[in-house]
Length: 222
Image (cartoon, rainbow, N blue to C red):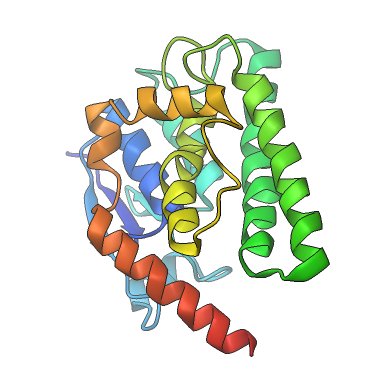
């Protein structure tokens, strides 16, 4: 009997795109179901009744939510092309940096997008320092995972693809190659990988979406 693997996500979300990337790196066939988050499907609410969010992975009728939890599950179920290191310390460090990206870097970037005046200066400096931590962690390596793309690289896809596009829309230059040469070298390397590009949103569609989303958020904050 063939395995049932389904991914509920949205095309613009870095969180569901990272699951798509992990499955493709593993060579796992799956069915993708696009969700309309303004009109969530009964299936999404059934499979993730706690958070009612994407992404959700359904494997043989069992559902797993939260993107980093899903990534670890994928790595444990399909152990070819491992994305987490085998060494316990290195695994712990990968989890640390992935959590740092989602809980610190992303949150600060979101605050910086809409902060004004003195608050914007403070949040921008905080973002700069956080990105320097990532820069230092990556220094001397091709990928966060070492010689090949790994757990932290998959989580950090948001830095490689979503950050530059959002900052382009905002017209700010807080994340540039001059300031972060190591990260930009990594971005060039990771975006040369075919499977990564298969999992990135179409640029023009993504650009239009980000512009509309920022305008909506600005209007809501007035």
